[in-house]
Image 1 (cartoon, helix red, strand yellow):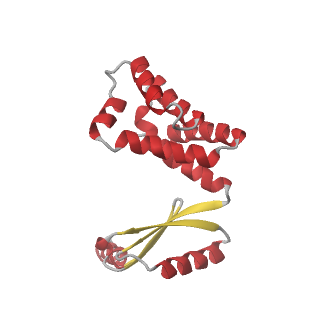
Image 2 (cartoon, one colour):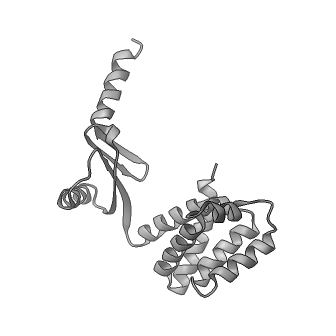
Image 3 (tube, one colour):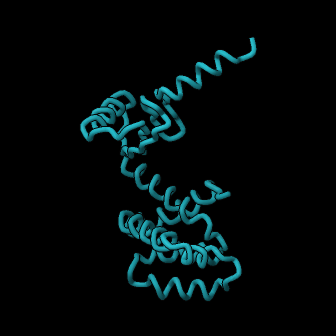
Length: 180
């Protein structure tokens, strides 16, 4: 199990250094590139996560592969994970870094889950109404989940608004079978 708290600490350090150097967007993009390159193939991910491969050898190979191709902050973050045997938090670190970058721009992540994909104007209208209601700016990501049957489920940070038909059926079942 990946520790979100630990990933947040590493992401905060990386973000702080990137902000000091004025390369927040580049480092974010490069962290995505590193994560995708490592996790896109099972053999490269197995190499990266393997505890039996010598750390110095792993560092040497990663540095040779990515040096000059990604920002130094992103590369040294990756090498630090290897040095500290924290390779397993790479995905969570990238997620936490993205959240910090959004927050720094005054934007919050918003996940909109629907049974069918919303048209672009429907999504933008929904986001505009939520921004007006909550007084915040959101960056929306849309996901489809046919098991919702219909309706919408909105996730804003740790707040979930479940307006799906499946969610309403669950509420009804809990109310019907709750002990009196």
